[in-house]
Length: 387
Image (cartoon, rainbow, N blue to C red; front, side, top):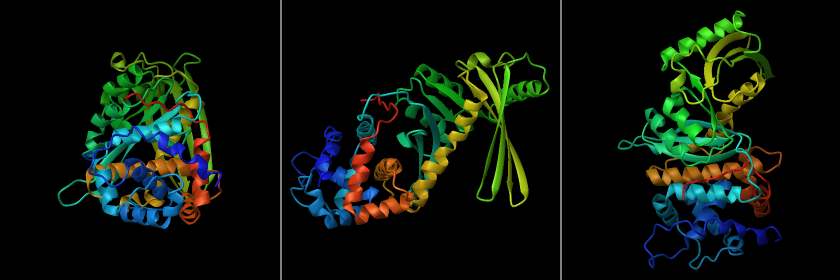
């Protein structure tokens, strides 16, 4: 009961969420609908019917801190409300819930990447493709923007960046986001960038390769090039990554077009699995002068968005199997999943995400622990700027 008395604080961050319904024609409070949905998705519910059923089974628990003037909403009500709810306003409320728990510090490292919600498509609609910003140190989604198809990530990323105050942040994006306009927007908003470079920028790639070769041949001045190597062993594989970071961009023909560019570099990866070795080489540009070890950490950390966000959404939340097709409803259910995942990751119990969800479904005390415990922790500064 002690933890339950603290749960009303959840409601504080959703009171200003605009209600999309017609005033005077509603039976259920928007606040009740949102809080039930968040709790239910944490507790192993993956569609609207699951959420409504969880509400019915836990109605007495919800009545401790929700009004529920007409009982638990039906699954149709949940679906209709979330299909009409402003997704950006909903994201902002979720993020402010986390951000309100202490002094705001540096944002740290933000990885940006896209993912397709494969089950959201049908014969008439393409599956939603969502670009997300992931705070790698806090294990928290900072925002998402939906695009029609993957080629539109170039247009979606600037919209996503506009949602955040990037002061002090280091933003990493793969080759799709290696665009002059995106680099400029990150710098203009107070951040730094590391962008992967591939054949879509032929001249830039050629210049980086030539600079790296000079560094490896010892043709650059002392101290200009730095190197580091990392090794990972586990699960039957070995991986060695060698990084070269060069603080010399004078040979870049287009250097004046890339905002604040200060570094070029290369990562050579050698991976051995079951006795078979494969190699990959990646090139990048960056705007922040820092050690090769820090570049290695950021580049390696970027792929945490795949393992800690995208993989978890598919494996622990069944996102790819979800048949929610209405675009706005699918987008908002994505926000519910990511909010739930952030709470679950911050709970210290030695269980997988899937097992934590099942435990929360079976035991409201553990659900309370997840909700209250996560908001007691001070996170890196998470600031929305769009009102």
